[in-house]
Image (cartoon, rainbow, N blue to C red; front, side, top):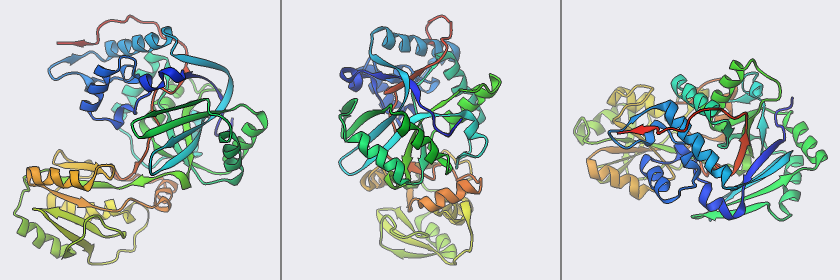
Length: 409
């Protein structure tokens, strides 16, 4: 089996796309999910709910919740909101905003590829979260949220994608400032050429480590059957946008600002001015309404994960000065660069904390960490935009079960 396979798909009907397709569950805050669940009765979020979506004070029966999710899926199917494409095919999926566009290929990646080195990750996973996702997928009997992968730009694949997107899209719809489009590749020669070219290089997970490992876990429990697949979208490196993840110290600070600056000067060069750094190895600090530029006092000859700015910040500042461990702390908030600096500084001003800004890793660093089989620190990368859920649907064997209430007061 090659690294990417065509698959029979259900695709949301054009007139229902804006009602059904939604951001991935974990790309939204609890409050954002609650608003969508209330306003859009056919949103895919009704299918992907987790115990985190329960109202405060509610007890959650995970099995009953999964049964309710399955009932929500059957409601979408019974209403005829999806069109069936039974012949296996690959799909081109484009995400376009006002300032960015990325186009990838949707297909199925064999679970074996995630364990034999053809697909490499860069993050660790939480076993309990993998188990919960595996149970959810098994009880639901369907998959929609795509694992996002990166491949190195390839001229042959690019030409096939360009020729495909010259035609009319199968779907095109917009939600907010994001336009999404889908084309179908059903030409056997084109599919075979894409498969051949992808076999020549490794793939890298950009988003969906837990979903991928949950699929692998289910595959292994089933006895590693041939023909199993993990729905995925593969984006070429040169179309992806990687944003920084800043670190905010939740206020109030455990020390006076003068003491903080003094301790920083013991380890770093500190100068007034600057906001978000524009060079690697340099950090910004915002505290008490002022910006500072921080630079390590010495140049360390390190490689792999230790060379990342997020690792350096943790090593030089977050652990020795604030006592934060590798796994994070409730007093440490991760804020992606998708959040404006104005909002970041507002949060700091509101509670009297501090914010450290930094550059994102380079794609070369990203690949180096994965190739070395290392794990990046938590919240080291943020790829934007992310693929949405509910657009593509892959049904598996239906699970039997009741459709009782999942949430109780």
